[in-house]
Image 1 (cartoon, protein in one colour):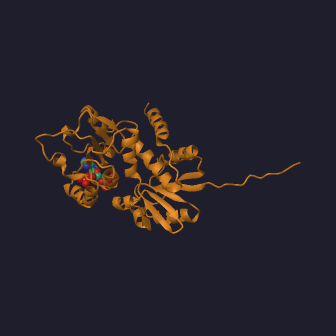
Image 2: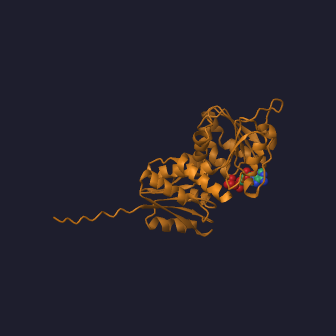
Image 3: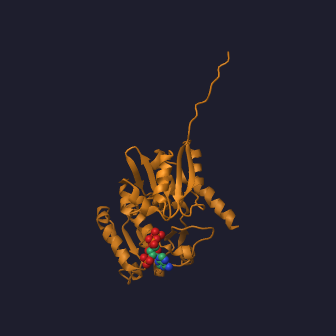
Length: 296
Ligand code: ATR
């Protein structure tokens, strides 16, 4: 008996990262690994949008059957404006890095802060609960991580920025949430690293959310903030440790770059789209090996 069985054709759901530039993005590799790991039928590409063509490109991708997008520089604010529904963390961040095309409209989320928290707590093993945290910077990257950090109930978050009023604005924005989570939220200009300079104790976690590492600039910060038990975390990463990481290490602290944050924000985006949570750690290990090979 001959039975001809034709396998049903199962199409993969399409996702992409949209940005300008986007050629360097590691997201396609990361999501391909997540798809293999979870068995989800996902196809993930790069989408280079012209600087004045974000919305058109998103709409065209959606019209062609795309299911969701990661959004990177410089479009995260435009994505926030485009979304018809926002997660609380995206609303707090004022920026969107994840779009999902739902039947009832475009959903915007921001998984960056969650990615940072998960990298710090799970991959690096440092609990934020009860911790004293110093956040350097008060731009978009800093704003995106405040709420996810507060949700972990640290004892204190001090936000310090070269331009003090921007730190004050963030403190004001998150004062209500800080009260809700029992966290002392304070800060200002670089002198605000210590409100009580008589007995300055090192912080448990210092996060560099300034754009300084891009041009190898070190944000001004009192050296006494760094101790041997401090985790100094730079949101940036590269083939070599950043200047901030090298400085922290010279002061005896443990330093980490933002590669794990990149992987964990991607894992959370995958979860937002698919309802399945991939393991970040093995993908992080593979990327770390690739970076080491490039550095050699
Ligand atoms: P992003 O979205 O990457 O956060 P941004 O919103 O432009 O970018 O914010 C950049 C942040 O890095 C700001 O906190 C900025 O400080 P100012 O508000 O004083 O400009 C900070 N930053 C950039 N270069 C810096 C440097 N060389 N030293 C200290 N802080 C720096």
